[in-house]
Amino acid sequence: MEVMEGRTMEEVRLEQLHRIAAERDQEYNGIKKVLDERQEDLDRREQELEERSRKLEEMKEDFCRREKELSSAEEKIEVCKKTLADQNTELEKRAEELSGKEREVEKKAADIALECSILKENVRNEELKASRLRMEWENKCARLERTGAVPVETSESKESEAYQALEGKVAELSRKLTEAQAENGLLKQENGQLKQEKERLEEEKGDILRKALGISRKAGQEKEADKAPEQVSEEKPEGKPEKEPESIFKEVYKDESMETGKEELTAEVLCRYLKHYFPGEELTLRHAETGEQIHLLKGGLKYVFVFEDPARFDIRAGRKKTKELLQRIEEVKGKHPGLEFAYDDREEEVVVSGYFIRDMLPGELMEKITKVSELFRQGEGYEYES
Image (cartoon, rainbow, N blue to C red):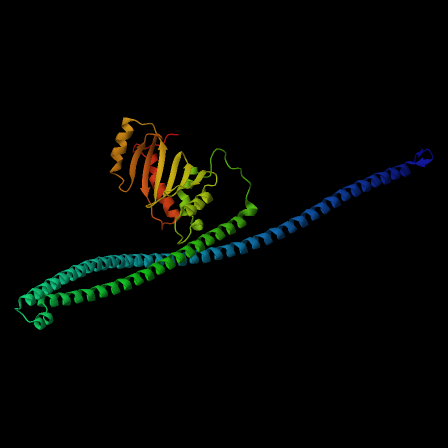
């Protein structure tokens, strides 16, 4: 054996082997540490995935439960809507029957009132005729008494058979008149009961409408609440208004929240109604000797409500006076009976006028006004020019 610096070759190789083994153990330990760290990270991620999967499963179960509840609620809502629709149909049918019966009663009452008037006039005529015959008979008796042709007792005790017949006829007419007046009173009472029943049906229809609106609103809120976690905020496109101003004017009369029930339609009531729906419009209430007036300016048209007897309305639009315009006014007059068409030379305005009754609801009057105002936007010579 060779000796290297006092050590043998075998010792040197053994030392090299030990050093190589130590380095290998160190590398193994490093690899093991890296593998342990990776395993810990995998275990942590696996635990997170399990937790997330559990939460997703819970959310899925909750979503299924809420979906079942929503489906059940929608079924109940559909049943309620169907019930309300059936009730509304039945009420409309009853209201139509009552309206028909009311018209019959009113017609019969009008006929009886006319018959009463005729009977009254006949009674007056017969009474006058009886008075005339009585006076003639008395004059005749007086002349006979003066001439001595008939004894006084005979002339005073006898009456004309014609006069007696007239007395009987007057009594019969008076009896018929009393019966007709009594029947007229019963018909008026029945008519009043029919009107009360009709008002009650209208109130029930209003309750059904409010219930239906409430159900629809509630269903919409529930659907929006269920969709809320999934919604993404979106911006509304610019340049597209939600509703045109004119369409608002057309639909405003449908809202019954400002209707005044059976309150008489006065200038104050209509002014309060218009202020509620058109707070930003030019609206004035004017007092005059002939009656109060309401002036409303909207959409380039002037609306004037005059509370005289009878009450009327004017709708005005500024137009230049031309031969063609005047010709079209004449042509359109026959197409719309009940309306008056004219041209105001002083104001240089086309005027459409009509009448309304005091027992109308404000919404009903606005519906009528809306239909008339459409004439200014149709091809009948009243096209509105801004």
